[in-house]
View 1 (cartoon, rainbow, N blue to C red):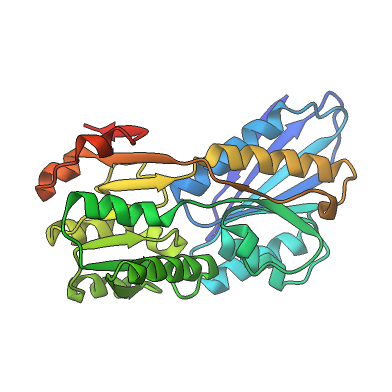
View 2: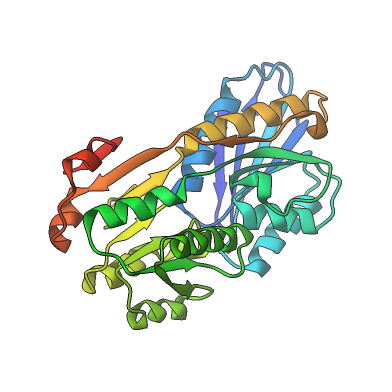
Length: 312
């Protein structure tokens, strides 16, 4: 039998129970999960994680999954980590670098499995009691796509200076642009008021990093860019087709499934140190023809042939 229960305090706390054949008064295993806000990329990851966990035979055990969905800021991430530690969970799963770093900084001995990190091989992860999976996409391809459809002299880069992996993406894209003699404009989003920076920067195209903060206000960012007729590319999928011209991303489902596999192995006695971290490099490329028409842009047929999907 499987039941789902949700509670809605200031920080959403959802509890999912996976029950085996035998009934128990108290959960035998508790898994804490931190997922920033309601960002679709992380939500899809978590749904895949839950589905994979539910496929596993629970036997006589009851597994309780506690989900924290903090707002995208340092204090909220830290509070979410502390709550799960205080709740004495057996294992913590964190989606994205900020949530992962918040758990690491608490210096708990609770095993940690991360997912949704960008290029985890170069992330500043410390500690031995952790493992996980992440992704990497070829950022140079985004520059190539932009230059295939219009003249680009300056690329704006939306990132957040309080998110380590977003900073690394900013620096990587800035370096790639400079190699091709392109100028870059830094657009640092730390609070909603920072969105006004988009109105003052003169750019030919904008790249949006995988910043959790930026993606909380993605619709507002795209509305500003659309008004200025500036095309945008992202490394997270545009699930609502809100106006991104192109997305180059790693599907989140595989990461959620792998995180579940790692969690299962740890709960059954394997040490995180013995489970190799993994970086997914398979990508999907989506072009939005609706947005292209609004911007007066035409995708070359050769470029369209590279796409996984074209939004008509």
